[in-house]
Length: 167
Image (cartoon, rainbow, N blue to C red; front, side, top):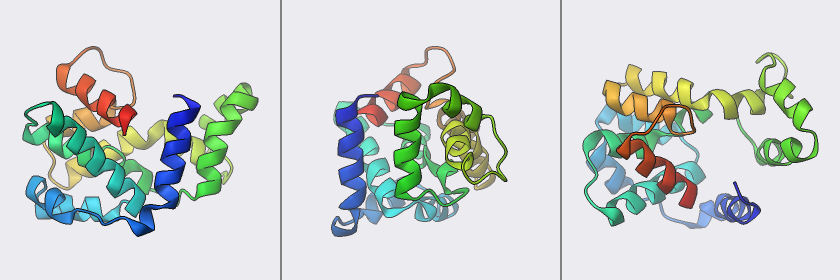
């Protein structure tokens, strides 16, 4: 992921307080139970998720599973607080000390320094389980679980990944 994209993400997060969240768009695509999941996301993550959905819509039709996955792909990040200093740490440390970053990503959730790295590594799987528990389809949960890498080629997954990268 490029430095320019990370900088844009950081600025979007810092300015999120001043941007309206289009709750109506999320409500049209999510059941009430999944809307509660969406509301757990930080404001900046809600805005990011809505940008992902809009990017997908600009490309063409977006089925219900892809819409749910676009809006909830970062749901697993709600497992623990993820303040700005930790977000900066998970971007910088892999570039400065990759071995340490890898070790932390395999650490214990009781280690507060390891938590942000675990969150980055595990949020897709955690988010998929959380979404499934709230009623998401198996397909939507699979898209969420695989949005950050892994699974082979799938057209909807490729679209989701590309939209996430651009947003």
